Length: 99
Length: 99
Image 1 (cartoon, rainbow over the protein chains, first blue to last red):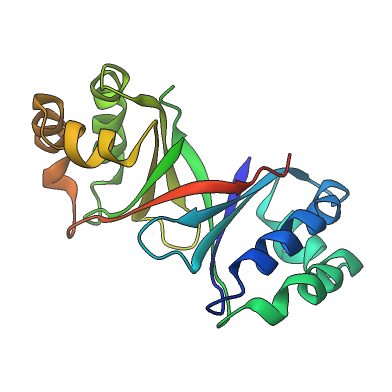
Image 2 (tube, helix red, strand yellow):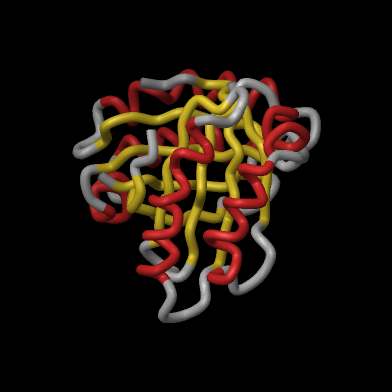
């Protein structure tokens, strides 16, 4: 299981619209191959900064299959206009499962 | 519930020792006031880069109570020598709970 961590800066004043768009986009992830979960976090220190964290079975489920899918086009159509810049995306895997 | 997301760059070659030290430090978080969980993730794209993600009831449970505690001193004693630089720490809260 991998995490996609996408750091997304949102245009000032569009935070509520962005959050609503992400909530609307949940089914796009739910129906994606290898997608096991997702949630959106908002920064306390930088309130226009978000972290979208998505659970994928493999990195390629995100980078190849999701990005090449209609769902991705729809995702970007829903949320892309609120981005202040391109998201910064990284993948991670859990190495210590504390508690 | 808040996440502390700490981005930690580890000295090249010390990744395994760092991971072992974090595993050893789990009880320090488990016994901390307001700490509800923790896990360590390693970057796929930058394998010396980690994300420590800790669940806190409040931001102050981390920034005031934990950082002012003996447990924090012990945490830094266990892992600090492996840091390639100061961790970059941010707090977030969940705004969309997808699935």
